[in-house]
Length: 127
Image (cartoon, rainbow, N blue to C red; front, side):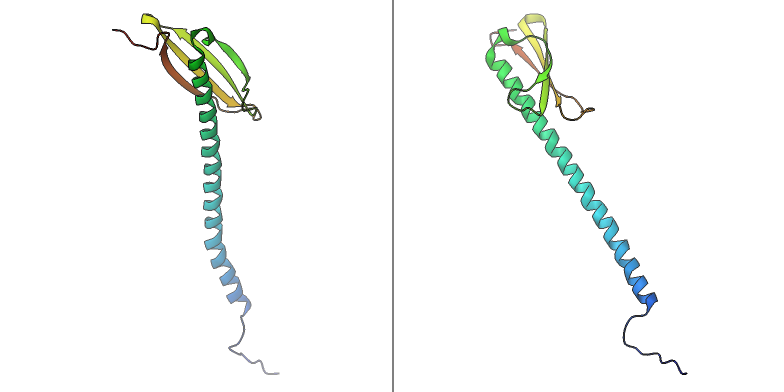
């Protein structure tokens, strides 16, 4: 029996080579897409945490000095996924250092973000 070698169709080696070339191109591409998605989710989460923390800081400043007290972590009244703590330190010349710490409640090892500001009870700085 005589074997004919035709030019039509793929042989197994060509198909394996094409699959290998596709894998070499697609795997890094998917890896990059997954990494970009992960970084986007991380940045979005950090932005949300900072916005909630800034809102808490603004509410504290607007409430006045009677609200400037130390508080342990407690749930945020407006965003239930977060909890925050407040640390207030009275400095010289009527200044207060106010720190707001905020973190996610649903993640056990959540990173705590900190926002800090200096404030006065009269809202003016005097030399």
